[in-house]
Image (tube, rainbow, N blue to C red; front, side, top):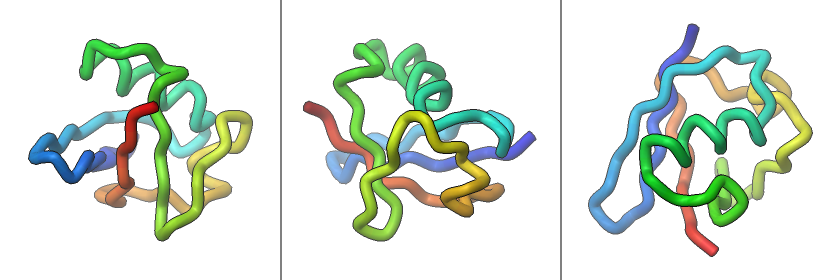
Length: 73
């Protein structure tokens, strides 16, 4: 179990607990529940790279306490 920090740069920082084996799409669903928005309206970036839904967090080297940038469509 890891904890990932998502920052929307508007003052909202959300911590989400998940597994490294989870896909980005599954992670977005967990994040959407906490934010109260639709998962398909969320865009996540790490170091300027947009994370694609079908790839796992582990493949993007997202580990415990990794910071992700959160954007809304």
